[in-house]
Image (cartoon, rainbow, N blue to C red; front, side, top):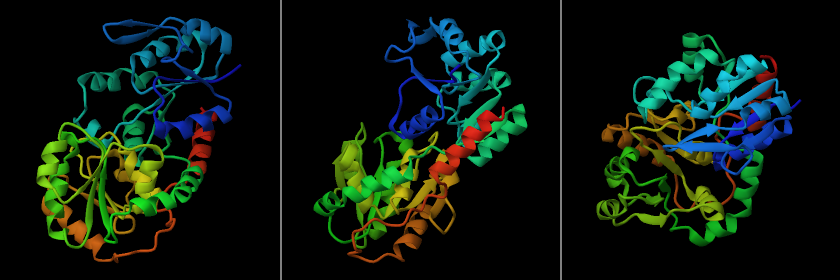
Length: 334
């Protein structure tokens, strides 16, 4: 008997959770690399081997991807095989309140939860909403990395951070795609009063790149980064700004906090749950440039130039091991 965690593309910020679930006895099945036979029809994925997999593994619990076609298909087999069904869900309160990326997600939010025994969510407000609306067990698990592994890597790349450091002024940064919903022009406009006090760094790429370069020729544009190159910048970022007008979560918020950076986060981003107002950062209305400017001023006023380059204190409010233990215990108690 083996419990199952069915996933599609395993993104980097889910890898540590996947490892933890594997260590807890879950068999990880990916339907993008042949673990599960699938058929594609007009871009949709349909399971061909679900019945055989369930007969072979006899799971007590099956974890499925967020409100996907796969999830709905597995839910139809729940009564036949008698397993408990749990779904991942990256919903933010902004999405729940009508700002979904696609209409199909809004429909799936009505169809799937009545069939679930538990739902894995990343924020307390979202947990409360699903529990009150559907009466299912909410399982809090912020989208986060294992901080012990992550901080060991940050320490390892400190020499690289020293090499790429753009002077001694505090670094205000954005990390992500250069697209409209990220609202980067508002960040640039709010940063203008601080050009002599701080360095703006825009990490990423996308269709707005040339527009942003014209708006902020003084900014450092690194291009899209990953691995050690991105880790080295996290050691340098003093303030991460996520001003998105639409953001399911924003994994960069947690990554920056674990590296010791303060954050300014849109109230529309799911990661707003990580912000402890005035302690590790601030929440802002993404369309209010004046508010964003004021919060940048609040944080920059307490920062000095030429800070020693070293591994800083972890400002993330959660600890990975504690969250995983709570998640596993919650699943086992279904």
